[in-house]
Structure formats: C-alpha cells, structure tokens
Length: 82
Image 1: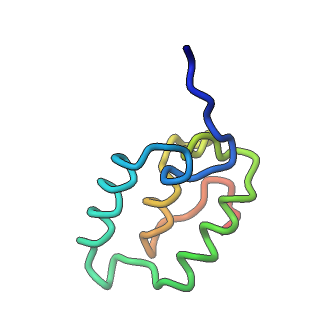
Image 2 (image 1 turned 60 degrees about the vertical axis):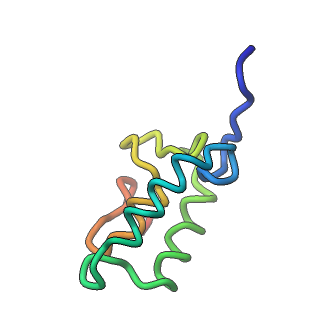
C-alpha cells in the first residue's frame, strides 16, 4: 500500500519526523554567520509553503529539503522566490 504524501507540507507535517529531526540538528549546528535569522527563515518557509513545486517536504526543482536550504543565509530559492 502506498502512503499518501501531503503535496504542500514540510517534512514534519508529512510524517517524516526522523528526517526533520536530523535536519534540525544540522541547522542548530550552523554558525551564526551561516544561518539565516529567524524572521527571514520564517518568511522563506512561508513562500515555500505556497509553492506549487513543494511536494512531500521536497522541492521538486532541486530536490532539497526547504527547511534546510532556507536556514542558510547565502542560499537562494531555485525559482528566485526568495
């Protein structure tokens, strides 16, 4: 039986808690110079949440986990939305 995957959800919301936990641990280890500030991070994720290319917690353009990519100050959206 195939799992139903939420098309517009992030990892934590689509039942992939273990993957989310691993990513969160990596984000927490980023230096302040590498990490995006909390307000900007939230804005980026809000944009990703409304993107038609988010599926099952993965960006279909580049294959990244948006929660991880958005955490880096110097990263950019592959669609140039942020």
